[in-house]
Length: 269
Image 1 (tube, rainbow, N blue to C red):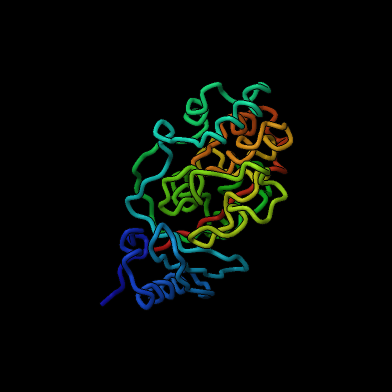
Image 2 (spheres, rainbow, N blue to C red):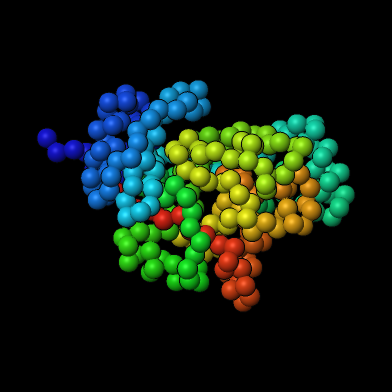
């Protein structure tokens, strides 16, 4: 019997597999991609086991991202920040002229809304890579290697791995330090799928949809002294950085190419 198409594998079904079944699918993914299966391991995620698969192909390390019908985005209206976070935001950010007086309104402006989408199962590069050309030229450049840019929905699903929290690790962030230069915080390690993602506010990842950027704000919040919470907010899974995106894709956007990166995707069949 022929194996099921990998692109049809769902995240929900993946979570129900035992390790042996996951390893068989991982081997199928590696072979189909013309790569080498590097590792299959099980981690704890959202209170249950999650199998993590890494595949090496052409000198890049990829992680298997099971898709299907998934929930992405963030419900800003129902989020309840801690009293400490809210007080710090008001004193460090709003009082200094940054952000919106209504934190929920600010989140609604910079984060994508909660929604249910369908995404394919795919391989996504573990690490983002500096772009080599203008953003508009990257799809053609990646296509030469059989790769493409991730869509915003794919990026958010790969980052959050089913978590509906503000950050991939939860709803809170350290309030005694900013993320830049901190290698001990919740952003420092790989995410549930094994991706090094949403870990550095200086790394701004372009997507297949012009004008939508994920993963960082080019360091603007840290350098600008926006306050502790707003320095962490660029790492929020659903943050699309509308102000940065407008600048990058504007007339002077070429000045920011050095701050941009991409995370190649390899489609599975």
